[in-house]
Structure formats: structure tokens, C-alpha cells
Amino acid sequence: MQPIPAPVPERAVDSALSFAGVPLSVVYAESDSIEAARSGSSTAIALVPPFHVSDEDVYLVLPDDIGTEIVDILRDGDLDLLHEAMRDGLLVHGAIESVRKGEVALHVERALTPVKALASLPYAAEVSIGGARPDADDPIDVLNDLDHLRCMIASDFVDEEGLEMILREPEHCGVSWRAPQDAPAHLQGEPTHVWSTHLLDGRIGIELALFTEYEELVVVLRPVVLEPG
Image (cartoon, rainbow, N blue to C red; front, side, top):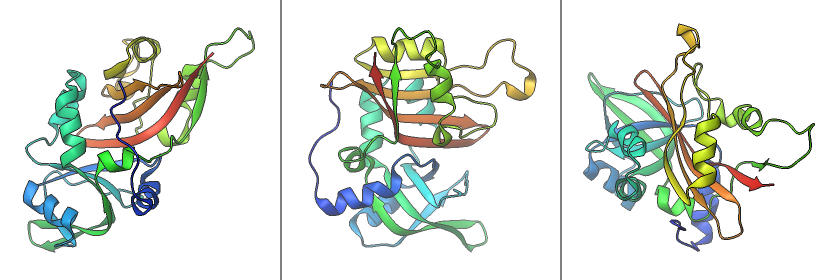
């Protein structure tokens, strides 16, 4: 299944490039505030807790009625709700500032809906999977060593079971990595989740990866495309 529409205006393509392969901090806001920023009638989005500041000043703003349930949506493989989140959320390049005591706003410099970004966003990396060369690097190690997918201290991007699901299912929405049972306590990170799809040219696109650490969520859009050997 190809969930991403095409094509989009050049201006949207230019805006999307700001979010390519970049860890996006996930924050939350009321739908009305998101819509005002989407329409251009407001340049600030009032956020609801919890707040996490992005090192790159890039954010995925989700409606507060979705909020941290985005983790459950991906875990449960609910593609309908995931597509709804991509439609109703907003990608923002901007800065978080305290407005007054107890109130925090995300000031918008550039904004684009995730579904529009995914229509034009290039994959940030390409990794070959399979092949018969005995000296070939383990693709799991290659994937987990990609700089833009090293988002959390205790979590990786993919493990053997997760990669198998990505390769097998035409569209996969679920866990891609779990902490090994024998990992020390400080490396027992939360599971990583992905949304992937098999493309018409035979490659497999990772449309979204979601990392979790305590209350902080980080999303990377189109982090990598897999080239089966």
C-alpha cells in the first residue's frame, strides 16, 4: 500500500526539507491552536504539558486528544488513527518560550502538515539488506549506527524481530526494537516503533520512527529506505 499522496507544490517541498532525517521533539496542543498556526492566522501555538525542547528547534505538534497515545497507536498497528495524526498534526520549525507563569508557546517560523511533508520528503539514508557477501556488514548494526537514528541513550532503532516484520509486511506499524532481556538496567529502554511500507520499486521505506524515553517522545520522518539484496 502506498499511503503517501503526490505531488505537492514546490514551496511545500522546500519546507519539507527542513524536517528530513531530523529528530523531531513531540509536543501537544489543542486542535484549535494547531489549526490557527496551519492557516497562518497565528504564529504561536499554546502547548499543553509535557514540554520537551528540541535541540534542532523542530517539532511534531500533535492534538492533545492524541497526545502520548501515539505510542499506543503505533504499538497496536492502528493505521487509520496514525494517518489521522499525520493529517491533523503539524511540523514546526520554531522556538518554545514561556509566555507567562504556567503557559508555554511554540513560536512558529515554518510549518507544514506531516502528510504534505511525507509527500515530498526524501529518505535520509539508504541501506542494503541481504546479499551473499560473507564480509558484508550486519544491516541491523548499520541501521542502528545511523547518526539521525541514535536518538535515545537506552534505545536502538531496530532488532532482528523488528526487521523481519518490516521486510515481511507490505505495510508495518508496530514495534521495531525491544531491549534485550539480559541488558543492564541502564540500557532497558522503552520499545521503538516504526511505520514502514513496501514501495512500488521494490524498496522498503521507513516512513516514521518513534523513540521513547520516560515522557519524551522523538519522531524521525523518512529516516531510511531499505534496498533488499
